Image 1 (cartoon, rainbow, N blue to C red):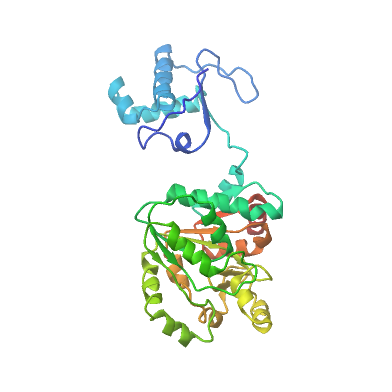
Image 2 (cartoon, one colour):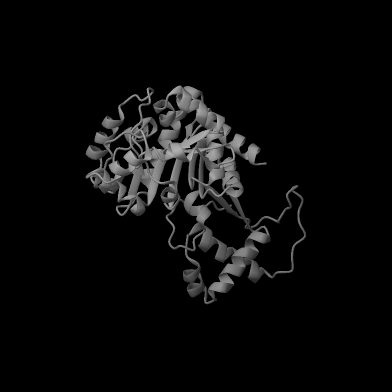
Length: 354
């Protein structure tokens, strides 16, 4: 039995599962092929020479990580033939691939979410106690930003609790432009003031930083329009169409769940709740179906327009079990392309989607 070596991929046509997942690949060399129940299967009609060829092609591709082009050249066959032989080696049982996810991710739920929704990536972590959940999600989000970041990125962030936790976990990020996506709220649950978070962003990253030193919620839409044109804020707003990636926490319409909720008086909170609000994303409210509601309230928010947000290629949403209903609304709205969550929330979303 041969096990795959931990070697870097030599070419793009090396299988993606070998590049990204823990994979054990076995070549059934001298053993007789067996079915799933363990019974010996009847040998097919291939010759010994063909069997050796199948095993040689499989060994080169899966274990030695040679590309199909290189294998074809060395064995004097076409690349098409190499692909056909690899498929035959797997279908005949000569090659078996076993994916073994580590315990710190829930790969089954991640895959199920991506199949069921429009998400391009679902990073699902095992559920933990509520007190540890946000820190665990922040760790995963920070790792993702570091892994995918490039110097050409224009990264949009919000000056809030989740962003602060994520930034605390990043020692160094590729020098990219940082854009604040919205003004700051008066949320009472912030461990650090939003202004401190903005300053920390400016000091930590080597790229250009575009802050918005203004409130999230204003008295009327006219005042929002006026502030958008002010020097400093106008520079940040001008970066919105250039964004390549945004990171935001999914807000829930309840106490301690949303910066906008905290910024409103009780009458404003109740009116939004009566309209069906369950989620808040950067000042935009969603009902349980993912439909945008309370547009007049969103118009009073100094924030990135919803259509501009949806035009960003990678929209990273972070939300755990305390905001499961809001995460579901976010997914239904198609507001995120990447979701960082826990297994309880993932199971809830999948069950609700049916």
